[in-house]
Length: 141
Length: 141
DNA sequence: TGATGGCTATCAGATGGCTGATAGTTAACA
DNA sequence: TGTTAACTATCAGCCATCTGATAGCCATCA
Image 1: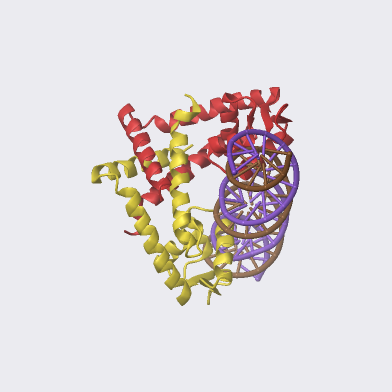
Image 2: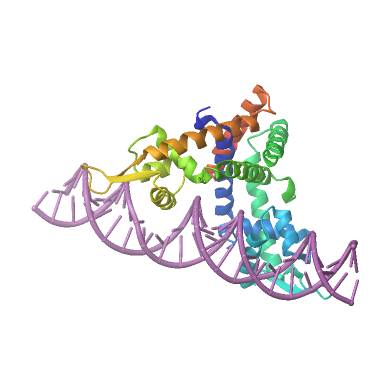
């Protein structure tokens, strides 16, 4: 099949367009999409470790570490050694971090609603279901 | 809406999984997904310029330039100044480049078929159509 | 003719993703 | 007990992506 009609291309173009929109939406908060994703997981898992956060975000520990270094430099998160376990480092949002995350996440939720609006309930469910099936197939390859 | 159920996340996860599969498939040919995409366009547009190639791939000219530098270093493409126009640089695949691209592209086509197989004709058409609508909406944001 | 605007190529620097490698910790087990 | 396997954090280096900046070329038009 010609490359322009491949499923791979449709998925990639959709991701490119949606992530670019997310990046534009986040710009006013000084957060990147990757940072916002990490903070979203963190907001549900106070004191999580970097390795766990990496697994939740489906990136490597190294990638997550570099994101965390930047968030720590900006005072969005703080990392403290685990009191009992010598290797682990616990991660928490600072007060300022929680504030900026709450605002940014509301903005992202708004964007998501805008992107979903042109689709009716059934279409949205179908799209999510089909994307999930494609993801599962891809992970086996 | 909670972040785990957002459309943005479904699209991102699907892209992550499919592009990772593409990267694994291309590894034996020594090509990255970005390089393969650029070569796919180039195979249909002999003598195209870097700026045009960037637009076709929907990346910035700077990004395309760095990809082209690597492809040129590896002898996959060659760049020659336009005979009449002082700024333009024409891009062509070398003989070796055409060979490796043909093999790699066949492998990608095969992967795309595998990813599409679990979906019937109607589902595949629906998925592409819905992704296109989401992309169009995102570009307006 | 000459100035201006638009386009091309490309350098620099930041972010985010990967693989590979290293060092230290913990836990399990022979 | 001591060794080993598994896990954690993190350094280094590569690729792809972006924005911003620079320099050169071309075409148009006052």
